[in-house]
Length: 225
Image (cartoon, helix red, strand yellow):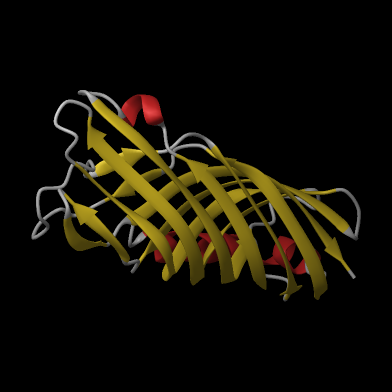
């Protein structure tokens, strides 16, 4: 996924080049506000256990479907929109999957995120405008996770807060209701890394550096001033 964002941006610019007249007709420059809300469909955590003591946390940990949302403001240049948003995501551990194999487990992750985003609107028509784009920023992550063998009582876990780096790649459809309002239906792949949490494994102190990944579906509203 590291090359997804540049690829979809190039694809969007290419489609704009094919329909320059329509793109010109669709230009409505100006400041807008945006709000989005949705569900985190496939959240998981990746953990590189190389170099760590005996760790009972899986390399891939699944979370339940969670909630996510963001608000922000931006500027529509006609061909490209640039915006800044702040968001919140709340995830709970999928305990049924984490407890397979005779383990007990608990965990959650909450993220407050601030990103700068850029989007390309593809002017299929005045009403329907698919978009592609993405963003990059920072997240404040409050997380805990533990997994203990119920027979031996040996386990590992972490708990804490840290700043991480976040990026996301988006694609969706904008539906213009009128000159002021556009309804969005979109999908997003996001990744948050560069995290470090103090924890323990089999009673030995260690540091965990998890990576959080998610696929989300959102609906949103853009209002142009």
